Image (cartoon, rainbow, N blue to C red; front, side, top):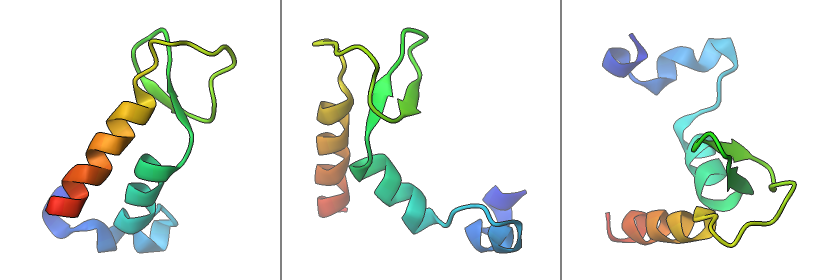
Length: 66
């Protein structure tokens, strides 16, 4: 339902706003888990194959030209 009404409808629930989600995705620490999902925080074990920084850099680039 939020997709049709806009993100503002969820404000009373305490859910994060769009700007907060965008900032978290682009600037906070995330890691790619073995289940191929991204989780917040740094990974327990460092992996050269973790594409998180590359993905965040690409998203910041797209936001800049959007």
